[in-house]
Length: 319
Figure 1 (cartoon, rainbow, N blue to C red):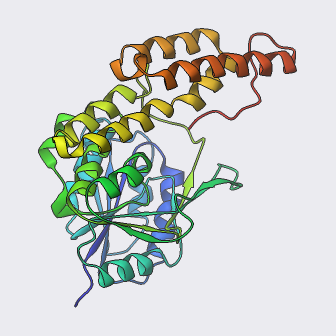
Figure 2 (figure 1 turned 30 degrees about the vertical axis):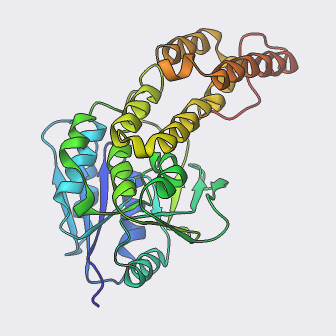
């Protein structure tokens, strides 16, 4: 059976230097049946010059006339791809050696796989490794539906290193959530519901953290939109317990941000809490209120330790 054609899709905005490194890591691959699609969201820097400096027929460049927003640029780069599978790579991340070989192995052994997610190595702008995300100790296959969703839905918020079968993309559904910070989670959620998924412990990319972000976060950091997506992906009664599990995971998730804000900025902390309380599932959850209390306690301790009542936590800033 011939290998499927893979499109590495890279939405970009205003990161010319990072994009150069990203493309260098991809174009080291000798795979001839590969296309690399860069969708430029009207970057005001020298992104066009960076892309044109690479003379490789596998590379295609599309430039939007105006900035369409993060989620719409993601939508477009999926549309522009011609391969059967889209390997998503953020413009400041790096493809690791052997990544395509691992993806092709998985798809060759199990062509029905709809989504691949990998171990995630992480580094900062200085090139220093930071804590990596390892979902499971070993590679494993997940059955379509609750099995895949409960394990992989939330990790898909970091879209880089995700390989998606393009025939599973719900284009209209993605557009319904296009104003969401995490609209892609609707697409990956539908894919996890419809087809088996595979987690590989082999890291496919190096993910850069703490880089400058060129988009705005809503006051609740997107948690309301994630819960709306869960409701829409899983309306059926048969998925009631899975939906409850995913919502519970979402309710637990703000703990780190609550902790950080409580230790650094009381006004931001209160604003974040107020935004979260507009979400019914948050205010009705004992987990949420417990996390708020823990964050206040942790924040007060951190400020006292530093002797600076107004700022300066001993915790890292969320990315």
